[in-house]
Structures are given as C-alpha cells and as structure tokens.
Amino acid sequence: MSCATSCDDVCSYGNNPLACCLPVVCYVSALDLVACFFISTVGLMAMCAALAVILLYVFVMIVKSVLAVEVHGAEDAASILYNFNHNTTEGLPDKLRGVFWMSTNAAPELLASIDGSYWDEER
Image (cartoon, rainbow, N blue to C red; front, top):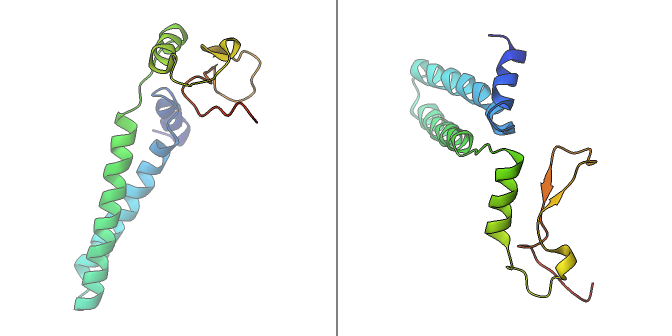
C-alpha cells in the first residue's frame, strides 16, 4: 500500500489529520520498545518505560479520535447541526439563526452555524 493510497483511505473516513500520525506513532513505539529490550541499565530502562507509556497513550488517543469520526451527507449534517444548536444563543438576531451553506468557501467547511456560539450584541 503506497502512502497516497493510505492517505486517500484516511480521507474517505472523515478527513481526520490525526490518522496520518498513526503509522509514525506505531513505528516510533516499536523502535522504542526494541531499544528498551537491549538496554541494561536501570535508569535507561525507566526512561524507556516512561517513553513507551507516553507513546502508548498517544497511540490510544489517536485511535479513539479516528474511531470517533462521523461522516454524514450535507442534508443530514445540516439537520444535526440545526437540531443541536437551535435557539441556544441568547440575543442572536433571527437573520443569523440556522445553518448556512458556504458554497464559495475555499476551506473544506461546507456548513456553518452561528447559533450555539458566544454572541456579544455590543461588538
């Protein structure tokens, strides 16, 4: 599997950039554990063990992040965003409530909602 194929597969599962770190974390963790096996001094072993625990934690968090990605079509995503944020911001004018389709946005965001965020009428 080439890198381009692997990145395309990752992008099809929600464009999660943390998924690209997964092979690096696996490689570094494996090298660290192999190095710890051959080092005999206690101080270096403790350092290697601590590093292995940190890398294991990072690995688990990356896997949890990749598995938590939800992929929805635009219509379903708009209804989820609207139902979650509807009327949650006090003082927001009616013309700014709802979900906005950002068709000319150069960034990869397709939908936006101001409702559900902080709103200061004086600013």
